[in-house]
Length: 256
Image 1 (cartoon, one colour):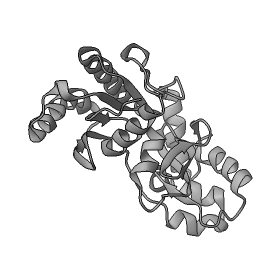
Image 2 (cartoon, helix red, strand yellow):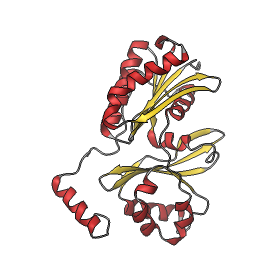
Image 3 (spheres, one colour):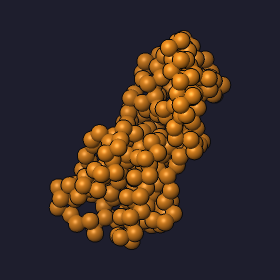
Image 4 (cartoon, one colour):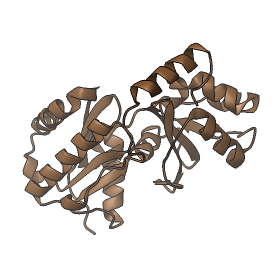
């Protein structure tokens, strides 16, 4: 499959909005700014700014990659809608890139040719996590992303990696956000790995690289087939659940 000359990519799955224009030959323009509620308003203006900076028309874009999730519900919908709308107008393919894979790829080169445990804060007392691996420069998720409490996630990791994970690399924003709960649940054997955890946000430049590689493998889709990856359907706590979580935090324990 022919490689497109220009890849447009963006991610608004976390509190950051990142947009990149991959011009090929290792030429990448990227802009990152606070996102959240602003993402839907700022995404397309950032696209226009990068195109102007590159002195290229939108019509030159041959592929669109977007951070598909899991992540913030509103941010995922905004990115997917923008990808669908632009791709329809351009008649170009789309690659929905898993957010956790983009986090791992953004942590290069330190994590190249290794196995990585990626975890992002999912709010509501949970985190999203998945295992990723890079072999011969190609990043892949080793299993589906999950949404779990720090305690339940830690139990899975100890079963898989043992009480001492050795040189296992950790990245994402959940390690700092849930440091106390994870440290307690994982135990002393994980202390060194936790100290080395890298707080990394998904970068649109990484999304563009992953999208270009996926397209070359024949994994791109048409605009109408692009979908966000939510992992869980519930996007907010009820009033009672928020009250219980607050009480649990005040008592110094993780909410059940």
